Amino acid sequence: MKFGLKKMFFLLFAGAVYMFSLFGCAGNFKYDTYSSKDPEINAVMDYISGWSYSESRGANDSFAQVVFYEPTKANDINRAGIVLTIEKESSVSFSPLTVEAKADDLLSKRLKLKDAMVLSKTKKSFLNNLDALEIELSYKMLDKLYAVDAKSVPFKEKIIIFKRSGRFYTLRYQSSEAVYDKFIKAFKHSAKSLKLK
Image 1: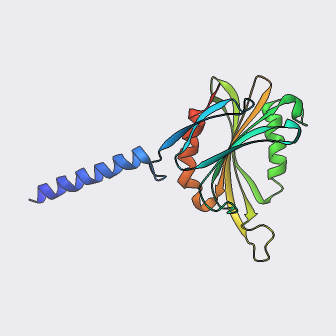
Image 2: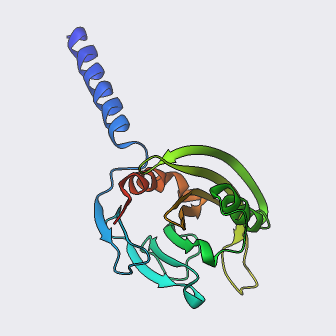
Image 3: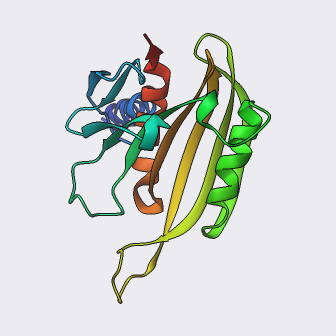
């Protein structure tokens, strides 16, 4: 009988380890496939089922982007979001026209935020062997805009920057630190699923 209990405990433990390695602590998400309507975005990728998305263009078509966001209150700054932004070389103000210069330009803005810190910055290969930079950073933002009782909330962001056919692509995941780990695996899945039409 003792051996039977040990065996049952081992099987339960092994099952729990298997489930954790399969789904991770972020949970098991289902995904829908996004296919852009805007020809400037020109992308297909998976996003978490139940999330909303919207496409937009910058002033004078300076950029095109799609934003995927967690279904919470529209003005909730703490909600998680994934953003794909595309900029033509002719629309950017930095030089040289490299992925590194694009990263420096983006970081020069982010590092102005309160307690901003670069946690990691690594070169990687992305999509069909395109050179890319992956950056992770943290900073603080106000939890309410234009409110007297607003307080600083820690945020984290992961960014992948790459260039293809004269365009800079920035794929970002941003959320409050409290829920960052909940969706990071989903972001990695979305990044892996990205295809440019």
